[in-house]
Amino acid sequence: MTGPFRVAVDKQAPSVFKAMNAVAAEIGARAQAVGLSRRIVELVNVRVSQINRCAFCLDLHTRRAREAGETEQRLAVLPAWREVDLFEPAERAALEIAESVATVDGEHIDDANYAPLHEFLDDDQIAVLVWTAITIGAYNRVSIMSAHRVRERT
Image 1 (cartoon, rainbow, N blue to C red):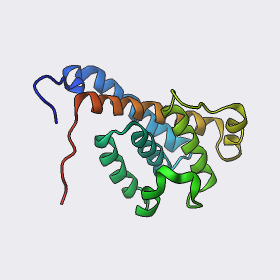
Image 2: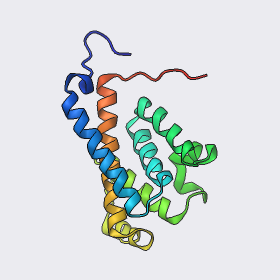
Image 3: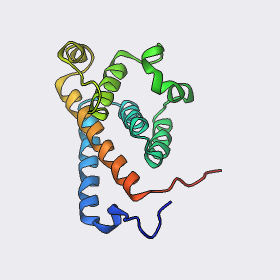
């Protein structure tokens, strides 16, 4: 909940937030242009938001993932995606990217784990997925620092 002491950074600096939205829109257009489905993009958004524990972005992007055809089962097991056989190779590569970008204080993706990404994604797709993870991470921080509220839905 936002208190009187909490600055809603998106509202305090609307031109900066507008520029962030323009970057996100460009990434979305680029994702479509390079053949990435909305579903795979939303998997990255959800996974990064899980790692960053951003409730607002999780609420938003799990809904968008469902709209893009994502299943409840896959969303439920997403934190343990390596343990199940429910994700396609390109999705697994995208999730590797998501986790590598989101966990900069943890283990980074090394060359041995980066090379296989090219079996399932081309350079343009890898670049878009990296930008997707970077951008949702920025949105996570805006929402967390601004204490954006999750509204109950019925």
